Length: 403
Length: 126
Image 1 (cartoon, rainbow over the protein chains, first blue to last red):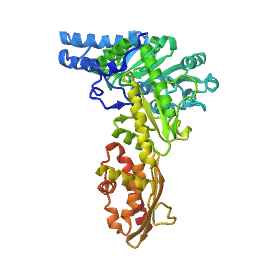
Image 2: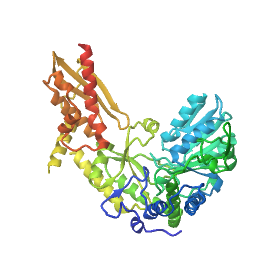
Image 3: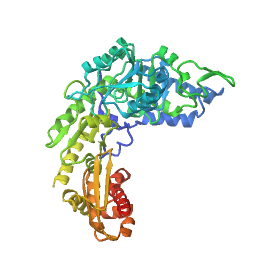
Image 4: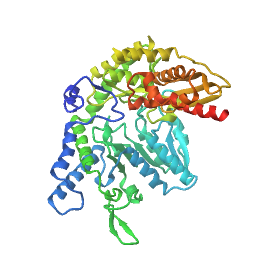
């Protein structure tokens, strides 16, 4: 594994180049490097045409770049081409899955989620449960802010049809044992969905190794553009799964009264896709592969350890995160006497960007007896100086608010 | 320099809120909150005829939400209900005296929402 130089990497990110800006909100959205921007621009400048349809050169070129991007994303997670569906993002994919899997579920069927889920992996299932009389169950969060695997064993049973779990918590940084949970799901005859929005950007994902049935993540958290993501599904399941959206491209033949679906993956991609977005997504995973996901993970661990050391030394600062097991570089914390929104505003004045709020995990916050926390999160471009700027900013905020 | 002054003002109201008490039985009462960040304001209007005798509040949350509530209670004292009904976004922004970005608007306007709600109640109580 070859470590990379984060200071050199930073030069590829236009919003970091001017300097004086410590971007510590990568969990909300990562920054975008020039090769990704250039790849998207190139589509608009060089081969602007629709995909899969035209008979002319530009259309062929556009299609080639779009499908090449799919192949890159598939390789990134060790999936097959037919198993790699472009989506509008993780929220889009999880909504589609809840609806389309829901069609095969009956009243009384159980869906197991967790107490730490992002609203995108909770609310769609709440709606589907209302629609179909499903029973939702929740794997609890323990005192050390990890998932209770013993409780999971008890919750996943013969009535369970779907288990859907976030791989990494955006609010806590906790890495969940999704491989073990997938095994429990399969033993009970249920399908396993993994929300990889916060994991895919931080360490290598291998869908075969995880043996999940479905997995989704977004490009914009993995150095890619907004508005595009990927849904992986095991081939046999995607064949069986009804389409979520209908229209052009996802059909093979249409009469006035019937339609025949296209082959995978296109069966699940209706309409003109986000072509530039997909091409940008391909360029983003290429950029990450060039850094090497093992190196990305090692860098993440290094910066996280540095940050945890520095933050824990600040009096009145409490880190809200797992005290056991693995974690990624998203550190939630609260500072006595400084409300997260005030902290974020004061840090903004120092050129430091963090997040303050419920992180789209209100049930988790409620369980922890919190309403909002501050969160600093890292990417491959994050350096120790960024963390130092954060620490200086927190100390300044404390002085102002506690004077 | 000027920004520092205003920031002192907000911090002063945050740490030493004016009229920070519950006026049980007041003519106007409203409870407002921002579930996304935990700001809570209980707003009280003590009315005498067509005038605000006193305004008070209890609450917790970020500096901007609490300071604007405190400043609002001071600004309301002795005003007619008509004048109070005329209070709007610009009133709050003028009281805070700093530019409030779109992300903090909800915090700043929480007390205004509470005032509007309490006025409605005061009116119906009469």
